[in-house]
Every structure is written in C-alpha cells, then in structure tokens.
Amino acid sequence: MQTKAQAVGGIVSSVEAFCGVDLIDESRLEAMVSHYYDMAAGITGYSVLPDALLPFVRTASIRAWRRRGAEETSRFTGIGVTEAYIDIESDLRVQLKKMRNPAAPVVIPEEEPEEADSEEQDEG
Image 1 (cartoon, rainbow, N blue to C red):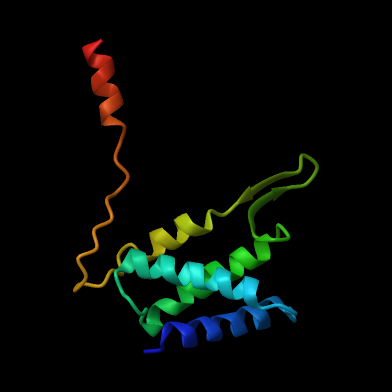
Image 2: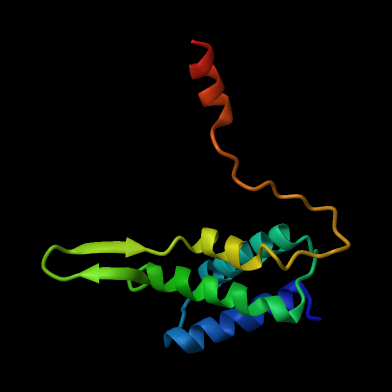
C-alpha cells in the first residue's frame, strides 16, 4: 500500500502522460488529485487508500483535468450545441459506494426523499 504522497505523485504522473501535457506548475493538478483522493478516502472510510481503489481517483482526476477545456462531455449535439457534463464527484461516489472499509465506522446516508415536505402538505 502506498502513502498518500506516493499515490498522489503517481496519479499526477499518469494524468500528465494520459492527457499529453507538460505542466509548468504541477501544484494545481496535485491539488485536484489530492481532493479526489481525500474524497475517495472519505467515501470508503480508509485513511490510506488501497492500491485497488487508486484507478477510481485517477479516472476522476483525468476527467476533471480534461474538463478544464470541456473535453469531458457525455453528450454533444452539433448544430444545437448542447453539452452534458459528467458529474465527476457523483460518479466517484457511485463507483466507491460498495467498496467501503469494513473496519471503519463510516456511515454515509443514502439520499432520502423529501418526506418532511410531503408531511407538511398533508397537515395543511
């Protein structure tokens, strides 16, 4: 298992290689990768992510880096110019939802329907 610094450094290198960029200042990309690493750790309950979960962080980081130029769209319509973007954080949450650390007491509640609003309407 890699430390967070090693994992972030490796992901930064692979994002640079995948996107074909030579960064003058890597701090922006490192901050982005670190954000997604911390988010994945929070979702799964691991303080240090296992190597098996790093590809999910890498994918989210590549999507986020490419989005800066609007290349990461899920759909594009030509003449009408309609673009639909992938929700990177929601996608990461869905992918890691079932990969939680069994030893961690992390409980992330599912999105609950608006029950409080419907009860208030019934009373009125």
